[in-house]
Every structure is written in C-alpha cells, then in structure tokens.
Length: 467
Image (cartoon, rainbow, N blue to C red; front, side, top):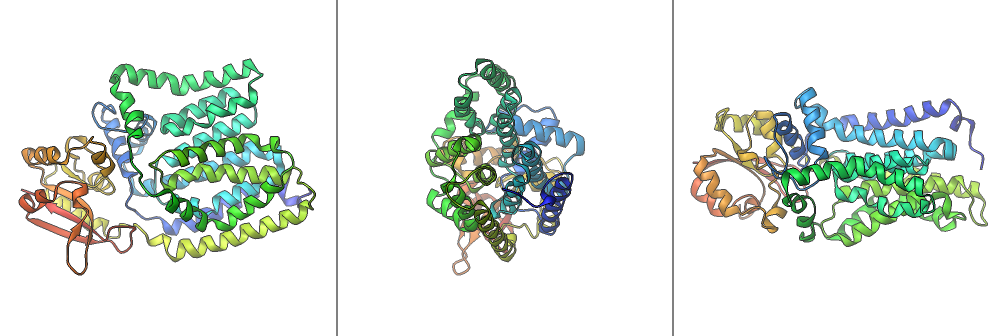
C-alpha cells in the first residue's frame, strides 16, 4: 500500500516531532499534583540517596529498580514537584520514540499509526497524570519487544530483565517469545544471557543480602492479594474510554493474512492479557503496555497484506476511527478526567503540617499524599513506614493496632488521612485504612479538613494533630 510522500524520508522525523509537540502542548496545561501511590517512589528515592537499603530499611513489595532509579534522580536533582509531574510524560514520549526508531525501517510510514494511536489514546493521557511503576515498565518492556523484533536478542533480554526488575509481570513475554527462535540455540543463549545479567544477578544479590524474606516481598505476598478493583469494571472502563481505537484495531486484525508478520507484539500482548485475567490485583495503569502492543500490531497488519479487501479502504476506515477516538479523548479527558484526584490545596496542607510539627519530628499517614507532603514540608516519615496501602493491612503486613502503639510511644505529632466525609451525617469513612478509629478519637483532639473537589472515592484530606 502506498503512503503519502510526507510519511517517508527525512520528513518522517518532522512528523514525529509534530506529534510529540502536540502531545506536549495538550498535556502541559494539565500538570498538577494528584493523589497517587507514585509519591512513595519519590520518597524511596530520598531514602536511597541517604544510604538506605530497600527491604531492610523500608518495606517495598517489588523488585528494586524503581527505588534505585529514584535514588539516582534524587541525588542529581533533589525533589522537584514540577519534574515529578513531568516524569510520566517523559516516559510516554520515550515510548513513542522507541516505537518510531525501531519500527520505521520495517513498516515505513505505518509506524505513525502506532505512535499516534498510542500517544493520543485516553489511556495514555489519563495514566500520564500519575507516576507509577507502569511507566518505566512500559518503556523497558517495549524496548525488549522491539529489540526482539529487530533480532537484537541480547539487548532484548537486557531490557526485558530491567522490566522485570521494575515489576515482575514485566518479564512475562520473555517466557513465550523464545518460541519464535526455538531453533536458534545461539540466539536463545544471547536472549537469556541478557535477562540473567539485568534481572538474574541483581535478584541473586538481594536474595543473598536480605534472605528468603526477599521472595516474600517481591513474589509470595502478591499471591495472597484479593481483588483490588473488580476486573469487569476495569475492562469496561478501558473499553469505553478507547472504544473507537479498539474498534480500529479489531477490524484489520480480523482481516490479517499473515500473522507471522506481527507475531512478536501479538504474543506479548496475549501474555499480558492472560496475566490480567489471572492475577487478582489489577489496576488501570497496567493496561498501558497492553495498548502499546495492540497499536504496534495494528501498524504491522496495515503495512502487510489483508485478506480479499481493498487495503486503501481499510486504512481510510482505521484513520477515521482513530480520529473519532481522539475527539472523544479530548471530550472525556478535558471534560471530566482532568479534575479528578487533583490536590488543589497542597500548599495549605504543607503549611499546616509544618505548623503542627517541628523539623525533626516524624509524620505518618495515607500513602497517596503523605510522602509528597513529607518531601515538601521537609519532615521524615515515621520509621520509613512509607507505603501504608490498606492492601498490606489485609495481607497482615501491617497491624494497625501495633502501628498505633508505635506512634503513641514515639509521640508522632501529625497523621494525614484521605477520607470521605458524609455531607449529611458528617461520618468520616476511611481513617481505618490508616489506623484504628479509636486512635484518632482518643489521641488526636485537633484536626483540620481540606476538601477534595473531585475524586473516585474521597472528598477530604484531614491533618490530625495527635498527643
């Protein structure tokens, strides 16, 4: 299929630059601090830069790459809120550049279908508002997949290993992709050699230093997790927000003639899909890599042969569907999504924490805001208890009664909670996700509430002054 001239030659780089510029221009006005578990990683970076070791000096439930990456950033720049807000967008830009550089010689101008569909999906727009492990994992796993596609098997193994060192599920496609090179022993050795260097050696080192408990931290504890968000709710949210993009994917995939042409991204996407179906604790951010692989498959299909159809007409339909999806992206994202989970009164919360504590006194609280406030207010978090997610209470990792006694014994002056306050009854729901209700009733006589204008579950932040 022939493409317009502006999709080939040196003009390719200009078009890539244009797509990235549009993405940046649309996203810059949306930058704002939001409630997210990503703030724990920035605080981990501070601890690492001060010489702390994960699993020994602070609890961490994944392999160690992100804390050390954040430690490097903290050592270089300190904590900068503006940079923290930009960081997930930089990973999305890196994804787009990776897709372009490693696929343009294989599929020509069709690479822009993958780049554009990925950048301007609702999923990418929404998830770029929050830093999470999904961002570096997507970039590293994409690099592994694309190097595999280009038969650079050693480097593919290196990047798959780094993806697994971010979150274990990042390495999953590396289990099935070798099926494509099973008859090439030398290349299999290169592939698994890369994985051993970047994934095997660091894990062996931490296993030796931490002991068997390291396996509980990064693996066995996760098997005991319950359902985080109901999967039907997650899949429907994903499908409805990017419906036209998924329809644009489905049509060519049904008409594909040569599946071998895009076996690599298809096997990888299928591997992640099976993981999402089996693993209980799944979140919307996990779909980021999945969608990237689907749009890469779309570009491969359209650049190849389709069964008994006019390829130019299918391409026109796909382009129309992608354009419609972009229109709905702008409507849904800027119409409602942009306001959700913004911390609109962060400066006031930080000032209140500073007023209620001295510089050498520790604070404690909800994982989605306390690490951020601690960094901005220059207050340590009590005993490095940074990740206070309630799922660790359910797993028995955190005993809230024991934690309450520790706080009392240490005279921790400030606890921060993210809650829902019933407008009719004024009942406060959610404080038990941090500490028992009676702790606040008996020991925290003074509190100040800060409203949350828009959120999925909560409507207020409470800063408690505790005796």
